[in-house]
Length: 97
Image (cartoon, rainbow, N blue to C red; front, side, top):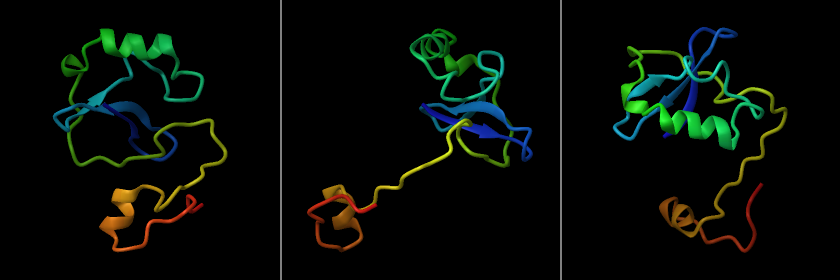
């Protein structure tokens, strides 16, 4: 399962992409996908809800930031052997930030 937020800018709805690649609406379970909302309890509630029975979101749809409440993201690139091989690069000794 992949968590997403979809909809107009500033009005995104929490969602998840299930194992079959279908976008599902999580708004009946979570009001927002944030660092506070994603806890062991909320993840258990999502699991208990059986995501395959949640409403399907019609496509196409705009995707927003996957969650709110985080000010900084660090991107790690070429730190995995497979990814380095995929792009034809040497395997780095240290992760590239």
